[in-house]
Length: 206
Length: 206
Image (cartoon, rainbow over all chains, first blue to last red; front, side, top):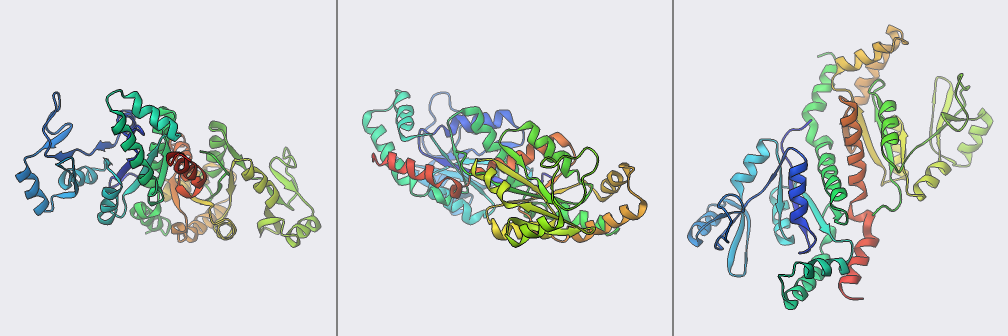
């Protein structure tokens, strides 16, 4: 019963553990593809074009905006970030469920263009745990951590815009829940009209 | 994130394998309870009151109808069959997901009273396979099988009234899919408002 893939939009507070979750989901189950963003920021050591990001010049990026070749884009710290439409659509057509990690404004833009997209919000089990995870990275200053906590307050206001919320407490349980949600989405009647019609014809003896 | 249980209504053609599926689901995963129907038909050898059915006299059954102690009821071959409200509500309050196997008219009645109920429709992979399963039981006459196949034609018209459809091809896969659908239903924001509000208060430092 697997036809066209599902576009899965994953949002959540910085520090909720989205990256690790998505990585585990793709490793553990078949049929998923992680969307790769385009960006104008410079590659960091070890990053490869077409793996972490598609690295583009500002001119190239702006041409893609003009060509509507990006589903959504935003600027962050003076750099462009966006989602290439061709990659996403190719994967969906091949029946893969494409995962997009993106913040809430981007999620809304995706939903406008892909009303069937599945919007998931990942949360830590508590604000305290969120703070612990952000501090535990050991790479961020107190200012950055405070800024992320304040941003979480804002982002929390939009949670009801998402169709599912998942609490990232135990990683394994959380990965299974995510896969359960995507599996469920494949089984709504609207995604299986062909099969239903075939069954009806068969039952009528046609 | 598990609060109140979910009422799960399972319908599907006779021969789709609903009974086996539900049995496996309850065996394999915690937190499920199979609803037990009340009936006025006589117990068959080996059947126990409160296990297969609650066996009631016609007077007792009609008193329950008058007391609105049944969520829904119907007559079939001259006997009453119905779903006792107290058992279902007790299990839901204890956080169990209650499974009700019921046909389409009953499913509609349930949804009116429990708008949060999850409506699932189980199908065989093909009409041919349905016929094979009905014949394979070896207990039904050709007339009964033909009657069930004709009934399936009618029932198939109502499939879109269900929220999810599941094809019972491979039993294990199907049980996992069912559990995935129920898991997903536990993760919609409306079922987790308390948690979301708690998180918001914590993030604001309240």
